[in-house]
Image (cartoon, rainbow, N blue to C red; front, side, top):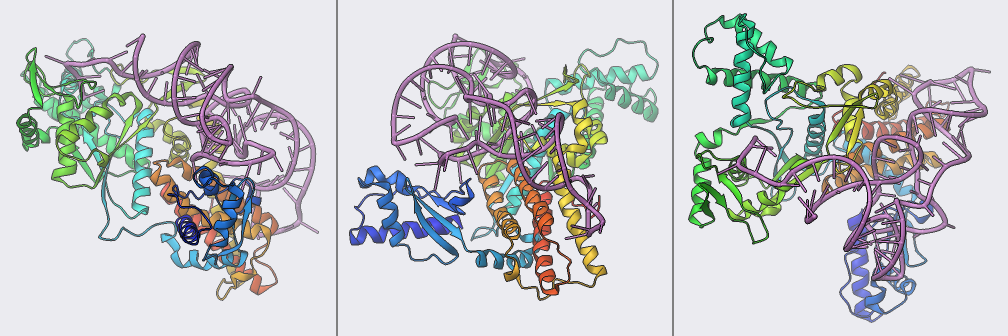
Length: 548
RNA sequence: GCGGUUGUAGCUCAAUGGAUGAGAGCGCCUGAUUUCGAAUCAGGAGGUUGUAGGUUCGAGUCCUACCAGCCGUACCA
């Protein structure tokens, strides 16, 4: 709708300029807004205000001339100019009513957009990717929920989406993990050893005990680092996989960092950079030049010959955008990684990859408190709160909703005790209750033998009905907006507004009544509301209950 | 020090450079059910959008400085 309005405005300006009603100038991009104040209509265009200087005319006058040249005003009952120079569009009630049939027809697809012409764009979203050195903790939950919801949003926008988890399965930390497990295993076999310094968490004790039970002392005496590394990784990753399922997340691929080296991707990328003379040696290490002098140089290969994490990052982005040919690569990173954004994009550019294909979402970190006291989050010390613990207490839907309501760039604090106490007040239940109430209306209608077949949507003229339709029709716009702005939290706010519009309608309008025709029409409206609520809840990865 | 980011109601947070109303939820106060589900609805109190300047027809939003919090500033990941 917004793009259509923008188009008609543009043509109106052009024809006004041809005739001379407006002077010639290059019009700015036409912005179509949804005004906050309902009396200002459904859509508003402030372009006349922006063009006042260019046209050297009063904004009100510009707006009036544009309106005079508008060709198509079909779905609108009113197009008016308001001071200081807005052009306001009001949708006609009959048009609004007719959209209800439209929503019913689209059903589960309502709010989704078809793929672009020429086939769907391939987008890869890599998220969570928590180091496999410990359990899935609450802090990472935000990453997971953001990534998964964005994946759902891109799917709704006609993209072909792949969800990927990048496993950091090499490096110093993994070596420490292996030696820590070796100690736990030995302890499980009754050896008197000091607790590991590196990874002291309970989960390694359990894995050590499991190994002792399965293998006895077979791995006790020789150097079994490789075995320990493998066992620790696979068991921890399995646990993470199970825990992500707990909140409705599944990955399409688990990508191993070490595979970048075994399949020679790294070698190819390294040679490419070297061929372009972008690598140089200093202090025994190999560095990558910065894009310009202001950018810092970064170490790619350490002086002991081992590649850095950054080296893997470069090979990985090549793997994504060149080898696997994704159109876009989305990264979800904690804000503590913000320093890496520029160097990754610069490296991509050095490889002739368009850096615009890389979208990096930074989210502020989550701090955990319990009754106001900060809780430390550290896998090394074994001091952490897992997603599983919290989900067991408050449920997956409330957990996801809680993490999703904040925009990514606002730091959030979760108080565990408060979260438990208030979980019954979580707004997700408000939204789900609206859905369940509608299901209940349909159960009632069935008992009474009422159906929505043949319902005439033109009967839906009560102000609460019109308002509910307006809210329902916002849904596709919200989906689009949340995607292009990478702002999935918008879904949670819209869901509450939609539910509120339904509850207000419920107060004012009985659905199952004596008047069969009005009943049928209202059942249609209520069905449309239910479809929209359900599609929204699905997009947020939450359950859609018929009863609560 | 330098760089990034955040500062909005008692609390947790929204708000696409727009309109005499900066909005929700929680908490607090007052009301509503012989009715399709009260996990609901209606109303009230509560704000100098950290401070000071600037740009703009128009600023919570953009720019500058300052104050406060968080993060980064590794041949860790």
